[in-house]
Image 1 (cartoon, one colour):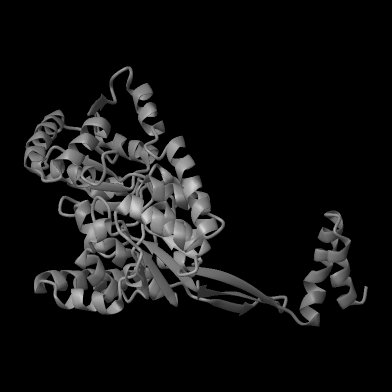
Image 2 (cartoon, one colour; image 1 turned 90 degrees about the horizontal axis):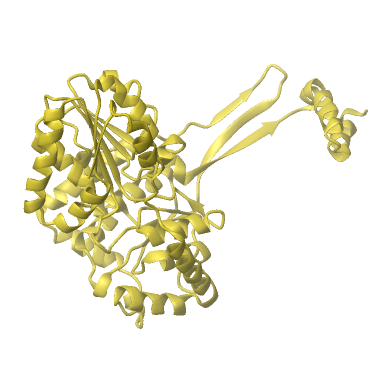
Length: 430
């Protein structure tokens, strides 16, 4: 674990190194993914079957092994513990309500020159949703990806999720039923992304692929951007907690570990103006790790990538947070609004001591598919708009063209494009 103080002479150099640190996939992963994509593109389902057997220990030799039937998803939902079923339904209800408010409005108006202008929003035809199934299975991720797509009006939702050793997570199946997905394919990794992008004999291609995954999945999305739409290239999880000295060290320690347990290369960072809280949180993390079932992963993440930054005053925190542009930012202070107003770069922000990041992963409503690796500087979390595209339109009569056409002719001629100019001149009788 790295510990920094803003007042130390070496702080700026150490902090800049932290900001530049990359925890994404390296050259070896990129090379392997290139090979996998080429294999799936050339050999289709045969390559998928071989790769699924090799990496997941699951045989696709029989037709029924390729997909999870809708009936099986409905049965999984019906057989859930009632409290768990109610929790999934609450999450779905809140996610749906939040994302319905994101639906954009069409525009259609006529300006002062008589030109009709506007834009209409339409859903994409088909979306591929990747849901991890390796280290852990995430029904919440299925809801977070599928529900915005449904709200947008996407007609076909194809889910890809690995089923290691053939085991299917009933919660993922139940979430698929709640969200109303059309297909669930039992494939994972870079090969699943390639299959969704290019299509195979069994799997029709999609227009957009969304959802989190490991380094191979992220790299496959990066390489296939342009062949298919991609929501984002997400890296390891991150949390930044800004905390004053009035916090319970146990709460803050567990908040930090809530992201550390995701992945050995996840990163948890604490900013505080209280040295005693910093010491207490560091000590408490050791205690919590001793009790945590996910301690192996969480301890590796914290020991290798955890950071505590002591500031002289919390007014320094927004600038540090903006430089880090973390996936999740918790502001656990007496007056979170004061800091919130100055934080410009974050995937999602959690305000106050009773708004832990973990609630955002499940039932708060906003999407938990968020930019990582400082990408919050230029991108946003998954939304309804990711599953839609905007088409502009222009309508004119002769009078409208007379009003603005001559300027277009001049610009076309200045750019050396005479056919552009001529197409307008002919209509104006010039």
